[in-house]
Length: 384
Image 1 (tube, one colour):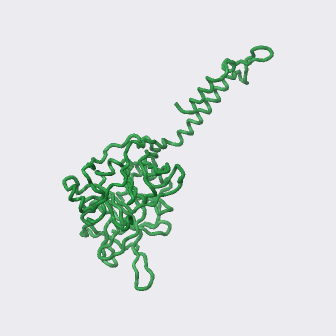
Image 2 (cartoon, one colour):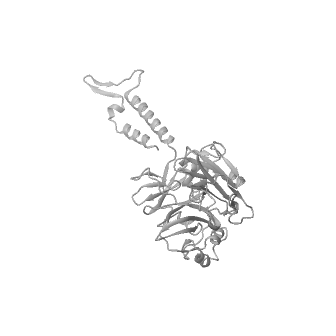
Image 3 (spheres, rainbow, N blue to C red):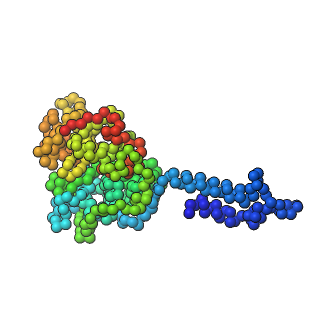
């Protein structure tokens, strides 16, 4: 029963007997209280309360399912021991699969040095959903189809779902969207956590290229758990009606540049290989790496000519099908880049733009003003 209806029932039941009978005592005895049209006081009150109840119920329904709090659904993993990919590959060589999905981060400074890192999702994030550490707060939301990280400002724990998107809680009780990192309730409401440069790829690709990258120690207590194939009902029940511009479960690369949100359907990226786009006169390049089904967005490279200033390398990348793990080729220099934005042989590291592979319904719920590549013009250019 709706809260407004409960309150209305209590109010009616608590009225004096004289009112309930439609009568009032006056100098002449018991006199029925009548309204124009023959309604007694009881009928009029009941009508008005029903009207208020209906209005309140309609207002509540318009807000959508909203927040579902289930803080005990998943136990957050905090500050696990650290190791390196090379060591953990040997420790768990019988359990790690070449195609294990891993959440990777790029060039994070912590504990006095800078390093990359990788988290095998089956071993850590599928069980705990949130890993809170000094290297970052890393989240995995399989129902909304994304995994990502933020720079921590304390410790965080799993809290529930809102709009079909996981919610985490900070030390001070502030609630954050795990997709955007933006606080929506509590003392820091409106504050946005700084995103870590992350992407999701496969264990074999990452370990082959970056064996010295940090990994969390994979003790025997961290047993692999197969990724879910069914949607969590609490996550589903928290969803609002999906934005109809795309099918709800369409996978997109959602890009947020600090001011503008834009969605790139993965099927479009898969066909393009490399895609150039300009949003509000700011160029960006989108890479798609087919072998691991990974997409990421970057600012184009800046090359320096002697002592003069640099220039943007717009429209310079193409895909070399024989390029192996670094197939993105700059046509001016012949240099190769991989999906992490690293250039081989001394090429500059491309500046990462906040980008995440995610289901459309979740991206549109958090960024309702988002544009869509291919539907909304933004000076697109495609290179292959």
